[in-house]
Structure formats: C-alpha cells, structure tokens
Amino acid sequence: MTALAVLALASRGETFSDPGSARVVERATGFLARDPGAAPAAPAGLVDAEGLSLEALSESYALTRVPALRPAVEQAAARLVRAQGSDGSWPGGAGGADLPATAARALALAAAASSGAGAVGCDAAVQRAVGHLKGLQDPAGGLFRGSPAGRFGAPSPEMTAVAVAALQRLGHGRSPEVRRGLASVARIGTRGDAPDAPEWRLAARERATVALHNAGGRDWARWRDALVPELLAAQSANGAWAAAAGPEQPLGPAYATAQATLALAACYRYPPTDAALAAAPAPAWAAILALAHVGP
Image (cartoon, rainbow, N blue to C red; front, side, top):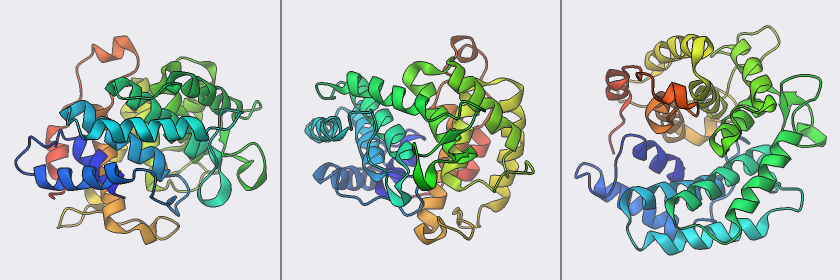
C-alpha cells in the first residue's frame, strides 16, 4: 500500500523538494527503504508488493538522488535477481498466479537499473522474465494466462493487461505478443463490457490504461474518453475512490485512490513507447489531474 501511494505521489512529481508533501514522501520512502521486501502479497492477486516497493524506491531515488535510498535499491534488486526461477519467473502471490509477480519484479529491476542503482544481473534477469511472460500467451488467441497451469492456467483479460503493459515498458511494445494482447484488451472496454468479459478490477484497469496509452491510436482515444468521466464520477467529495465489492474491497480507499490516480496520470507517468507517438501533442489532462488529486 505504501509503495502504491509513493508511486501515485511521484506521478504528480511529488518529491522531498515539494513543500506540500515532503514529510509524507520522506516517511513513506524511509519505511520502504528499511525493509523493501517485508510487505506481504496483496490479496487482490494482481499487485506484487515486493516489485512495487522496489519500483517506488527506484523512482524516488531517480527523482531525488537522496544517497540513503541507493543502498536500499541495490539490496532489493540483488534479492530479486537471486530469487528468480530458472524459467524466468518469480513465485506467484495470492492465488498462485506468477504473471503479476514476474511482470512487477521485471519492471522494478528495469527501474532500478535506469536509476543507476541496480544490481549485477538485472538486465539478464529482465530478459529472462520477458521470455517467461511471452510464453504465457495463449497461442490460439491474444490473451495471457496467469501461470503455465493450475487455477490461473486459463487466459484472461486482466492478466493480459498486466503482461502487455510490462512488455511495452521493457522494450517489446512492437512484438507480436503485445499486438495480439492489445487487440484483446481494447475489445473489452473500460467496464469490461464485452459479452464474455468480467468487470475490470482497479489494478487491471490501470494496467490496461497504461498499455493502451503506450500504443496510442483510436483504441486509446476511445478508452480514454470513456475512462475519464467514469473515474471522475466515482470520486468521493473528499477526493477518494472506493473499490467495488470483490477481492480489492478489503484493501480500502487508499488502495483504490492510488490505482485511480495512477490511471489518470498515465499520460504523464508513461511517455508513449512509440517514438512517433512521443513526439505528438499530449492530451490536456491538467484539469483532470487537479480534480483527481488526493492531498497527503
């Protein structure tokens, strides 16, 4: 939860130098730095606490260059490299799906390496993870499965969103696996309104938002134009969001608010992965982010 909050604040550029939130960010990153691997897996099954913790620390270090954060990033990255399986995966969290953990930890290692505070073996671990993620796509269609077999062996839209967003950020946005996965995600819509699709959980919808933003084009425009009014209409007067009934509900409003804010901030936090899209004018989301801001 703390890592998600730090990432949400970082999406607005909140760092130690911002007087409005410096103390909040300092305490939160200090907590993560003391033991970034201590957090348990979230019961929602799509959020990996250890991967998010390292990503939050890496982003904070990259933004602030606070020396005390560097050892924590290096140690957490080294721990993840050692824990990776021979097939490129990391053990699954709640429910046994290894795709969310593998995607989150590969992204975290890439963020650590980009910050300049990674560990020996980061790049090789990321490439092994990419191979594992690609191998989880159903060859008969575009969807990804959460694990090679077992309860999460069936392909699902939510696992597809998680996999596609990760593969894009890891440099594989033009791969055939990503192209097929994007088509499946776009077909479902922001409310999961395809006939055979369940409603999106917040974590998966945030990942789908990032994936479609990265790809751009008509599918992204349709998704964005539907998502923004849906999220703003669901925001409470105090600035918070609440998770719908289901596995995410016990995580409370802090979790829901962080996920909603990250979805709204996708245009700022994630530049398009396509160079041509990166040069295009960005949508005017400043007013949206002002409305979505939840103060510390």
